[in-house]
Length: 196
Image 1 (cartoon, one colour):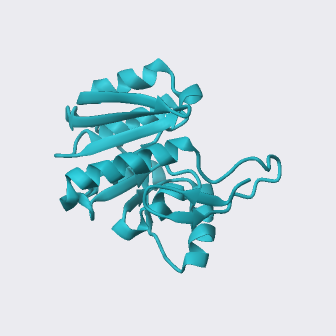
Image 2 (tube, helix red, strand yellow; image 1 turned 135 degrees about the vertical axis):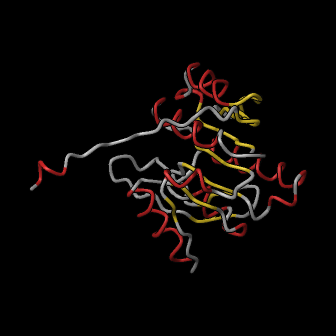
């Protein structure tokens, strides 16, 4: 396991202790791909430096590498929160984490989204993000975990979808111009007489 993560913005030493597989590291090529795309995006749109969001980061590699931009971080994973805390402690930085449900309130203009493992979760995130104005989303993942159905979901919620060439077994897609499909409304009716 190599603890040194060299990326477009800095070099970090990140932990990812996994006793069952010592070859696992705290990042993969998809993380590098996303950070390279962010670097290019910020060169073209410097006004977005303080409007970066990170969603579905695994071990904190994306969040910590972009700490200089004070990113909005969204995760509902207790494991992610644990590793983010462990990896930020030596750097003496604190990065607040928001719930996935709060994405709809983000002020972000550029989003780095690590491809979720399930299609339903991916669709939920894209549905929420498609409601936002003037947002660009970069989605990256490893090719072996990227079925064609994930492309269709991106096209379902966004008018503009561009796939980039694969790099070292990682894929990346840029999504923009959300279709703003209505969010489902959930209504629950309680009969309070049942509780008296």
